[in-house]
Image (cartoon, rainbow, N blue to C red; front, top):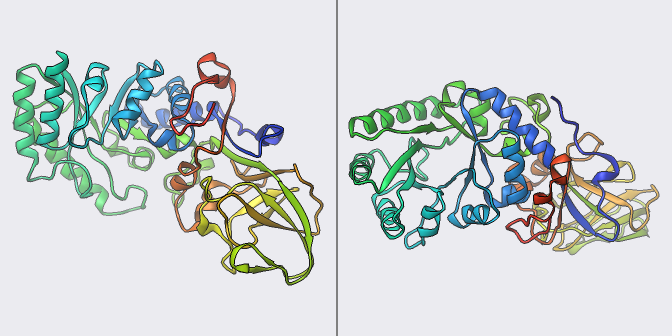
Amino acid sequence: MAHEPVGGPERAPRPGVPAEAVVDLDAVAHNVGVVRSAVAPAQVMAVVKADAYGHGLVPVARAALAGGATWLGVAHVHEALALRAAGVEADLLAWILTPGTDLAQAVAGRVDLSVAAVWALEEVVAAARATGTTAQVHLEVDTGMSRGGASPAEWPALLDAVAKHVADGLVRVRGTWAHFASADVPGDPSVPAQLAAFEEALELARRHGVEPGLRHHANSAAALFVPQARYDLVRAGLAVYGLSPSPERASGAELGLVPAMALAARLAHVRRVPQGAGVSYGLTYQVPRETTLGLVPLGYGDGLPRHASWDGTRSGEVLVAGARRRIAGRVCMDQVVVDLGDDVAAPGDPALVFGPGTGGEATADDWAQAAGTISWEVVTRIGARVPRRYVGALADRPADRSAPSTAGTGA
């Protein structure tokens, strides 16, 4: 069933709140359902690392599970433990380990841990011994990205060590995984090359007496556009938040996705200035004629990219008084100025920085283009100073009303 984006007054900040991120939890559940339908019979792991890409760890995790995700994925152990502390009991994988991390609580709490090297395996095994619990692991292999994962040269030794600890009951292999470098790029030759390398790694695991468990290689782009990469489980990140992982192929709307976050503020100041007035640091913007300027109380201290400042040809744009307004000058730490021309506005009027785009506002993709970055970064960097407000039927559940995000923002 289609889900209509949050719109109208619901996206404006509450009275007295200078700015807030409005997160539609029903959109999160809807987006998971879109991915689930596309990849079935593979399962969906909703990636909720980095405070659920800035949307709020616990509320988004619950919404993703309501939408049909059977796994949750995070980068760090402390993120996994925050979910467990909030009462989230779903299957959960944490995939970045560093030497000396206290893993006992994670092992005892049934957090699956990714292992990409023998040293990491031995630290997981030590935690298993200390807690008297069999550790649940996913083995990460590098299929060509040269980032995480055991290299082809390291893979056999890791498999032998895993087989030993499986036999002594200290380790259970629940999955084997890898990550794509360029699945978002149409026709990129690295994609089939990485799939071939993954198949070789899986076969080698079996020859070393290690059953791979759940096989997962696909991120959002591969899940939606590379059917042969779906295997048993896909790790959906950006798509969960309603944004296209490969806009060159299809927009989020064309994929049936609904952006979950709208960033809104209220004008803090409005003034009329004469032709030629310089605006903001460096006076890099001079108004071409007498105009009205509006002050939006959001800046790079809140996560707006400074690279979206006016560069002489383009900038980030904010919807004010029914039209998109370019940023006049530089993005400051706490504020930006927008050029309203001769249109009428007043302090307290809503200013929509980005949202689904259905009301004429800019999208996260638009801001990414203005800043020379990617939509992943635009939403994820919205910081702790911006409160999150959760809307949709799922937001009415008591557990979600007070669930904090790990960035320190209130629900």
